[in-house]
Image (cartoon, rainbow, N blue to C red; front, side, top):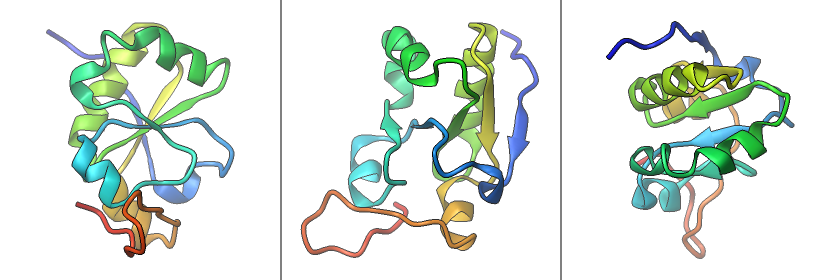
Length: 114
């Protein structure tokens, strides 16, 4: 299977109000994620494609994971489906290193990248 080339962008290039798709697993998401992101684990992307298309609308959808590998695969698939996408280079580690905020689903816990 070949994937379409997808633009990799640094976290600092992701607009604050842009649609963001996090494709990490539930325990990774719970530990820390970008506020407002849509969480769809990589294994559910194909079956939840209509939800992803709706979230993207006519805007570029930014896809993120922990370091950028899974999100690159998902972004390539979504590009093949006609969605305007960009992969967040370096994933949430780079997101956090760039000073972008994370939130946690765990009560009274400091968010972190798992």
